[in-house]
Length: 234
Image (cartoon, rainbow, N blue to C red):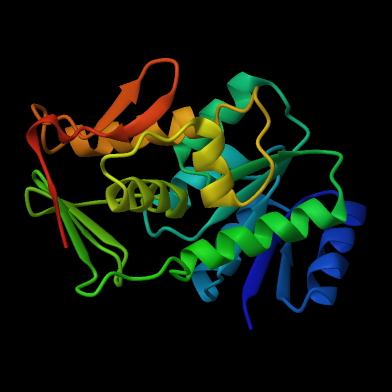
């Protein structure tokens, strides 16, 4: 059974989320501050974190950064902050997905299910489990990525976007297609999620390969692997 940690200081919202998730078959732990969440995470692991940003003690943004220094536990932010700037900042810091309050039960459960499917490697593995492209190597089975033999730390969503593009290196995908493939939810045109995750992937690759071009922007259409001087091997 998947274990989910809810980090929300509003007691009513915390209890409501706990009820919805338990009814959907999940094991749930609750924290009411960032400090309490950090303590719980030091004592037990979880498969997913539902996180509010405006919480006492350690803020939601700070907690994301602390978590990402240690592991890639998926993080779904549920916050009243609704500006594009807030969403972009949080996604850049390492959150996997972002929802704004108020929320509907069905959407919360759908997003939780989609994130957990991805984190458990729901995408079918290739025969060898390894994809190579230029100086990058991706192991689909262990969910590890290396650039010039140096490991890079991708979030679950970043990994799945890169994996999907590597599996279809010659094809251009729109933001809508990528969003629906990875999150399996309806795409909203104003959502900047895909742009932010692509930017994060590029930056992390560039830290070890400044000269290489990996993900190409096809202006007016979307994104694809830059196969102009590289290839994918399985």
